[in-house]
Length: 481
Ligand code: PEP
Ligand code: CO
Image 1 (tube, rainbow, N blue to C red):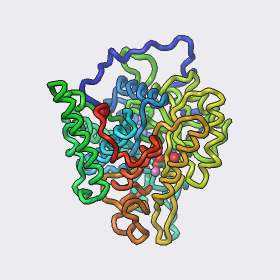
Image 2: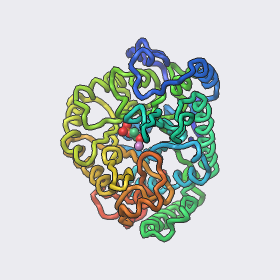
Image 3: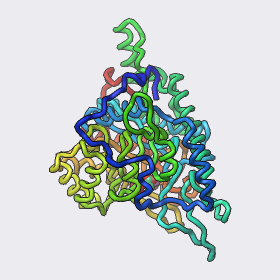
Image 4: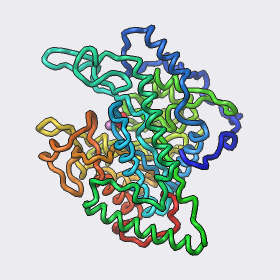
């Protein structure tokens, strides 16, 4: 998603002769396996009609964007880039709204600027948006006052209200989800093409409600320093530096509802193989990551870069098997492993996995999700996460990778540009009493602006072993925001 994008012809890659790519695979071969976390649609005819319609609708991304992202992820694997992946736990159809979309983009752009400047390397920016509409649930049904109904599985499947009508899975929601994803993507592309991400105008990324935050002021100093450096470079060059207005932004979502993913899996002219054209970077969640299950079967056959969430119960053998299935030829950039252990468990669970992958010489990109292993409920019933646990898991992740001789190449976060109070702690030391004030998530608690920026600064400190990145000297070399 950028202007001056390389066209389809330049992304042509010959099919590697030597490797047998995804033998006996088809976009529908997942149906021969056990598919967890799928809704049961009451009307098979209606499902088939929707599948036919969805299969004809235009795709949301292109194969050359997907292959460009794969090359960037390969660079992250080699320590030449850092991946920032973030967004809502779940998007909702109602939240497909300009302010919410642009605020989320603003936070991600600001965080990536902190990372680029502090890490002195380009950042791969991936949003958890434009399709993050399906959620895994711990139970198939929910019971309230003796009434049991299907669990809410995300807007792509059913509605959240506790009525039989709302909770009945409706395949037409896949058409609606495709449309809302397209609208989101269209708006993000238009903003970026229109210069929203231009380094000459970082003021576009200011969020009105955080103007007085101490972190916003520190951030402003960094922006001013970068502005000075840009003007200095342009004075030296005697002209404007144009590529500062170029930025790449990619999308990702959990590939959970396999009917939806299958219908958007396409072949394209002048390319071999199949692409999931609903998103650049599909991932599968911890609950559906069985190497013999339907989700892994689906993912193994698409040419997108793919990611898998790795929880604390995964054994080294299971992980190596997963790598064999998803990336048999060790293709660079193909496979990202997102570990989400929880602060308590990361110290015991992660080292043996890193050791096994290193010992076998497998090529993966390691990314930390410090959110999903640290979810808890308060006495008053809020689902929350403590900032100190999120920070602690992330810091431990860097240390554990350093000790194992592997590299942590990115983070996966749940965050929002809204002024929410969903995670405890952070710069404003949010307490349980604050949660009631602005708790908006219908699923997992998200970092707010200050908590997100604090984490970005922490990453720089851990990676560079220095003080606050915002106090270091400006660098004119950091052209890629
Ligand atoms: C998620 O990313 O929202 C999620 C459900 O994660 P996990 O599969 O790691 O629990
Ligand atoms: Co979540």
